[in-house]
Amino acid sequence: MNTLIEYLRERLKIVIGTCYGILAFVLAYSMYVDKSHAHTWVEQNIPFFWSIFGFAAAAAIIGIAFWFGHSGIMVREDYYEKDSTHCCGCNNKESSSEHA
Image 1 (tube, helix red, strand yellow):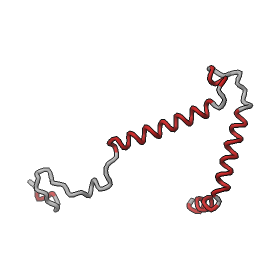
Image 2 (cartoon, rainbow, N blue to C red; image 1 turned 180 degrees about the vertical axis):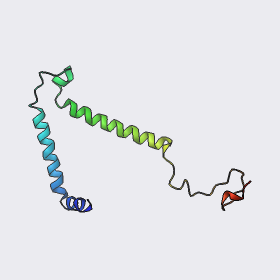
Image 3 (cartoon, rainbow, N blue to C red; image 1 turned 60 degrees about the vertical axis):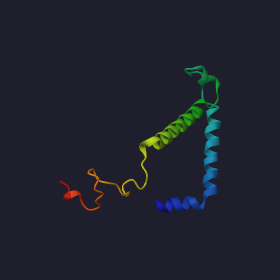
Image 4 (cartoon, helix red, strand yellow; image 1 turned 135 degrees about the vertical axis):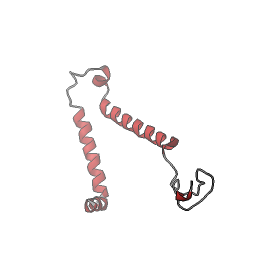
């Protein structure tokens, strides 16, 4: 897997060009999709509606996850390494087997 990633990184311009080509193909193909069976007005009249909707939904999920993660679910990197006092307040760095 690492060799594939290295291979693609060495040819980054080709990879980016290929992605743009695929995107252009998908957008061009979506113009020819039969819209006579669309369920709603937006599906029938707004071009690329589901592409825009999917992108907006993914961006919203990423934004909410980022906010939720930084609102308190993430802990500091040194959370388990910091010096802290034990439950009895003795500040003993040795094993807690000495506590009664």
